[in-house]
Image (cartoon, rainbow, N blue to C red; front, side, top):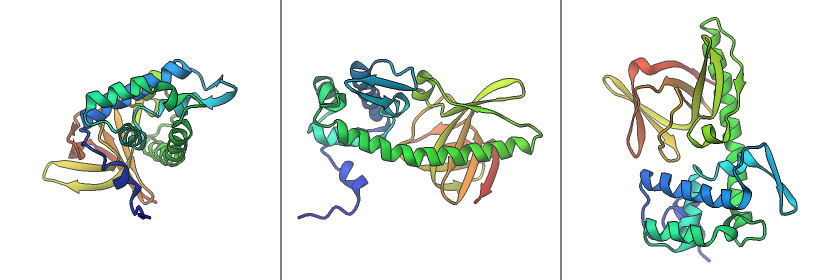
Length: 232
């Protein structure tokens, strides 16, 4: 029996490499498959097929790299085109409760969601602290389906304006002459939120994401974009 030391490497070692752009395309196709089974996910929960499931949990299928890699490996596809066609042909196996892969996909999302919820809670605590230093109290609200998919993890009111934040798990930060290079756990995705909050068990950084640049490995942000940082 082969002992798998790293599940991440196991999931990511299948057949061909997906670029970040490919992951966005494939992730959206997975989301479409989910919608074909469950609908448009615009409510808190959905009761269908004799079960009740969280719609916000299902929305996470688009950007979950473990789901994307599980689907890629399971499909046996050798190109992005083959992978997309496989997803379209296996919609029910992926997302119907009686489907062959449904329970595995839901387990992946549930485990990721637990980590993500903890990460978001810490991020909210930190941005509340940041705005308290500016003499403001903020009230955080969750995203809609579309906002969630487009990369806004939560909203809040500040200076009479609704603002948005994207939360990522921090891996490391390298400091250059004029910019920070922010490495995260997971794939680097584009988003429309005004704030990028990167957090792990030890520290948190809040950035103005207006002038961010992206590579496959990191976000590049001007030094003046760092708004707040703290350690736990």
